Amino acid sequence: QGPSYIWTTLESIWLQAGELFMADGRLKEAQFCIAEAGLLFPNSHCVLLQRGRLAELRGQMNEAKSLYDEALAIHPTGERILLHMAHLLVKTGRVHLGEKVLRDAVQMHSTSHEAWSGLGEALQALNYSEASDCFFTALELESSCPIRPFVIIPREL
Image (cartoon, rainbow, N blue to C red):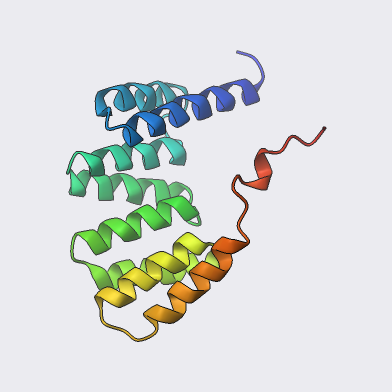
């Protein structure tokens, strides 16, 4: 009960805590945090993305891909979902498919230095000469990228 922004904020807090635990290698704690967020919004693309990342860290690549697929079904233009899916595909040897996902990501998010860098890595793995252009674009974009997204700045100061 209550305003929906309270629940979405709580979901965000649980997911951020899960990200911190994953970065620290504390996967059991990360799983708990992601599960708590999942109790609030079981079909959230953010929850599915984090569950996929956790599965990937545990070496469960098929489970991770399945979760990324679910997240993309809900939010097909999600930049972070596309990037994680593409990196998983490249990592598991499906470089051409990873390249395709990254090209889609670059088309939808043309100012994303991470998408350009990922595309450069995929093209480099395929020995394509255009990889260097992608890396150069990524460097140019990264230099103008804010440290924190502008959307986190409160509307009222």
